[in-house]
Image 1 (cartoon, rainbow, N blue to C red):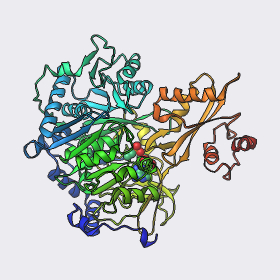
Image 2 (cartoon, rainbow, N blue to C red):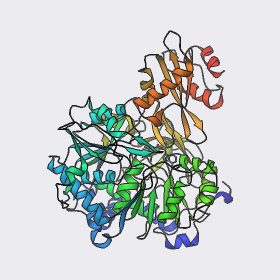
Image 3 (spheres, protein in one colour):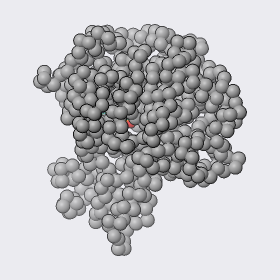
Length: 637
Ligand code: WTA
C-alpha cells in the first residue's frame, strides 16, 4: 500500500471522537482481549439497565455460549423506558413515506405506541416464548411491533417485505408461529406491494396461526378472514397505553432471523437478549461515534440484520434519533436520499456499496443540488466496497470531511465485528481495517493454521462475543456443523480474507455457495431448488456473475426436459417463477439454456467451472474430475 491511499482521521474528528486516537482503540482492544469478563462486565453495568445482575459474565461450553447468565433485563425497556426522563421529548424516529408523508415520533410517543401494542398482544393471550412473524413495510409500526414483542418476551421473526408468499410460508412453519403481524400493503416505486394478499396465500398452509393483525397503510381492498384477521387500529383503540416491561433472562430468545445458507433451506439464526443488546450498544458508540444531538440514518431495510441492529435496536438503545425511509432511492428522482439528508440534517449515513454504486452511476448533479454539510460520518456494509465507489462516497458525498466506516459482520454475528473506529484508525479504501474489541479474528488455511501477511485464507473468529448467534432455530446440530467444525475451536465465517503487512483485514467474499447480490445474501441451492420445481426444468445450476452495480448477479444454467421450448418466453417465465418462490430480489438476471451441465464422475455439478465461464468466459482451472469436457467447451461458447 502506498501512503497516498491511507486516510488518517482529521484532527477535528479525532478531538470530538468517542474513541479518540489509535492508542485509545488499542487500549480498549487489549483490555477486552486480556480480561474479557472484567471488560464486558463493567460495560454492561455502565451502559445498560438490568432488573437483576448476573452470576457470571459469560459461560463458554463450545460451541454454545451464555452471556450474563442469571441476569434479568428487557430490550424494550432499554430502548424506551430508560430514556423517558432525559429524552422524552427527543425524536426517536423520523419517518418519511415514499409518497412524501412524514411522521416524527418522540421517545415518549414511541413508548406509548409500544405499550399499546404490547397490551393488544397480551389481551389476545400472547406470552413469553410464543412466536410472531412480522411481515411489514418500512413503517414506524414495524419497530413498534418488534419492541412490543420484546417487551413481553414474544420471539419475533421479521420477514423482509420483498419475500414472496412461499418464502413467508416456509418461515411461519419453521418457527411454529401462532401470530402474524402485517399490513394491507406498502409503497415501492409508486406501486403497491400487496402484503396482506401474499400473507393470505402463505397462511393457507399454516393452520397453527391463530391471529393476523393488519395495519392499514395503503387503504386498498383486502380480504379479512373472520375470527383470524383483525385491524391494528381497532384492537389498539380498546387498550391502555401503560404496560410494564417484563424482566426476562439475559439469555431469553429475542428474535430469529432467517438467512440463506449453503443448502436450499434457510436457517433461522437465533439471537438472545443481554449479550446482543450490549454488542449493538457498544458498536453504536464506538463505530458510529453517536453524540446526543445526532440524527442518524441507516438506509437499509428493517427486514435484514442491518435494520434490526442498526435501524431499530442499536440506535434506540443509545437514545439517538433514527431515520426511516419507506421507499426507493429513485422515487420520484435520484436525489431522494439527498433531499432526506438535507431536510432532516442527517449527521451519519450508513448504506451498502450497491446503493453507492447505483447513486454514483446517476451522476454528481443529484447530490450536488443539495446541502449535505450536516454529514459528519459515513458507513458501508454488506459487501466489499470497491475503491472507485469508496472514493466517490468520500469525495462527492462526504466532501473529504467524513470518515467512512467499512463494517464487516453477518446475520450470525449480530453486531459489527471488523470496522475502523472513525476517530482512531487511518482508513484504507476497501479494507474493513481492524477488529472491534472482544473480537479475535484470524485468517487461516485449510489446516486451521494462521497464514502469513497478504496471504489469502478463511476468516475465522477465535472467541465468543456478546452478540453472537446462539444456535439455528430447531437445529443445534446444523449450527455446530456449519459454524464450528470446519476449523476446530473457531467460528467459521464462510468468508475469505487476507491481512496486510499493517494488520489490516481485507474481506474477499464468500467461499461457499452463498452469493451476495446487492448486499443481500442468496443461496445458490435455494434458487436452484426453486427452479427445478418448474415442470420444464430438468436441472439447474446457479452461480454469481460479477456485476458492476449489484456486486454479483444471479446467473442460472438450465437444462430442459424434452419437448419444444421458446427459450425467450421460458426465461421470462422462470424469472417470474423465482420471484414467486423466493422474492423479486432473487430473480436471475441471466438465464442460459444448456444441453448439459459440467459434472464430476460421481454426478455433482461443478459450479466452480460455471463460475469461471461467467467470469472469464473460459476455463483454466483444474478439470481432472470433469466427466465430459465437451460440455464445458460448448458452454464457454
Ligand atoms: C458480506 C450483513 C465485505 C460477507 C451485515 C458476509 C461484507 C455477508 C461486509 C453477511 C463488508 C458484509 N465487506 N463483505 N464490510 N459486510 N459482508 O448476513 O460476505 O446479510 O459474510 O449480513 O456479507 O451478510 P448478512
